[in-house]
Length: 330
Image (tube, rainbow, N blue to C red; front, side, top):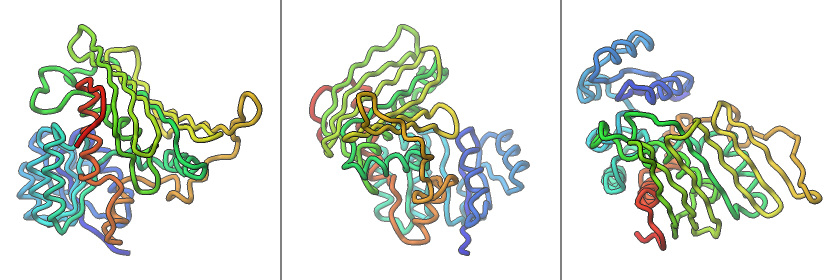
């Protein structure tokens, strides 16, 4: 079995998820972590029994990883990701991939010239339950409509002036997961649908960080999507749904693992399909973005969520935040 050396830049909350995925992937061997915060760095060193560095460049020079996960705040990603790609290192980029779409484009340009591959951590694309439901939709001719809800109580410092220059607004740095999920559910195969028209309403609350959005999106596949994302409400709720001819699927994504309710047209009320989801054709219950990325590296194939594709998700998230109404041009 091929073995790749992996390293992680950043040891915050998102990095812990990546470290666990690396640990369970038999084709990866963790060789280093980099983190400027000494407490976080030392905790990661102790937990994962790996060498730690305050400077990620020293880690790259000393450990020579094949694959690097860059899990810093969005405002710090661009320079680090471009450096990794210019060194020819396969690079996983935490969401949001930059502060705005122009930063994503710059990283995508570096990826296009690199010997290394790049993947963006839009992880909803890789949930086995999402993939199995999407497969059922494709078998019925593809999506005609999809919707996503991403709500949270106020989550300071996210969405406040304290994160100015470090992270974009929550719809871009956080709820972008479900902005991207709409594109994925409306697409087919390895392709996410392209947004071609957006009608967004921004109705922020009076409190700092109470960002609220409702948006209708039209895709190039003919499907329409609806996004509802509200911060400063009562609970953290993440849900989605997708519909095809004579078929509907409802996703509860708030907890883990996701819960799926698929329905087919049967009589006036429809019928809940009782058979469990078939996860084997989509990689099994343990499939995730890390396994997919390793598969792509070893097979010399492009990941599903490239930096070039992420530009379109960033543009859509920005359009929703801006309250854009009309065609979405390049």
